[in-house]
Image 1 (spheres, rainbow, N blue to C red):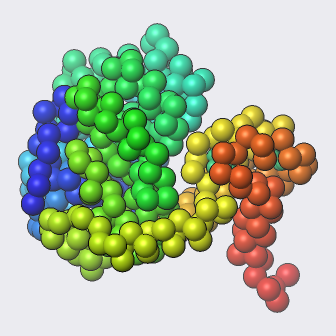
Image 2: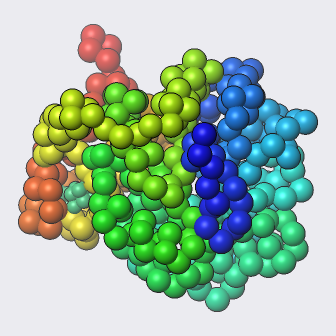
Length: 345
Ligand code: SF4
Ligand code: SF4
């Protein structure tokens, strides 16, 4: 199975890593079993985040006696010096390690957010100090915005980028990924299943793996699901047959006017609605568990969504011509139906 060097980190890893989101949704015992199983199969890159509730702790438990077998990556969503220091200390303690190989600025939303990351005495400065102290080895950035990541690649301040990449969101392959690889910046692909919208795992993984130089990190919550995905990677041949290409086109047609690509070109919304976040609520609940919808920032976003005035200003800005107000309404209906099932008051 093919290994690659993750850009200028110099870390050699398999092109198939382990994403730490879904293990939050099962028991601790099952989560630990799943991570250990993945390592036993050969996984040598594990990614988690401070934002994934129990994930770091569970990975830490699974790594007892196996720390040296994996490259360990985590993230902080905080944008202050003190907050990043606090998050890093917590990550180290939850993972129960002395060093994290890659620590990433998590979910950098837009240009303003990126400016906060780079600000003097901000997250990046804080992580540089942590690197000097030996508490982390490398610094990365994750974002759903290609514009933010393009800026980050141009600036050359990060060792890796983590980007949404799937056959429903293939745009990163046009320019961003080649540019990052050309500059020796490691590329980690997330959302390979587009948040669960792509149901055919073989197709999803073959598409991403057919892009050279990229590490994919599908998250799973059981050894059985892990093996299904690992089998695709281990096969080593990611060429798509004509039948598979047609299947991809069919999924693309099905979601053409319904799948939000998270580009945020529809912003700013007149009511301050985080449109792309709202349009991915179902996927967030599916992958991170229902409880994740109770996070403060999501509650605020959902409340804002309820105030959509149907002004239509976002419609012309969406390059995919999504019927945004209708999709917001459908998402809120789905949310309300789950919270108050039919027949219950
Ligand atoms: S239609 Fe709704 S989502 Fe779109 S800009 Fe207006 S308030 Fe925002
Ligand atoms: S609604 Fe359209 S413009 Fe807005 S983030 Fe989604 S795909 Fe991009």
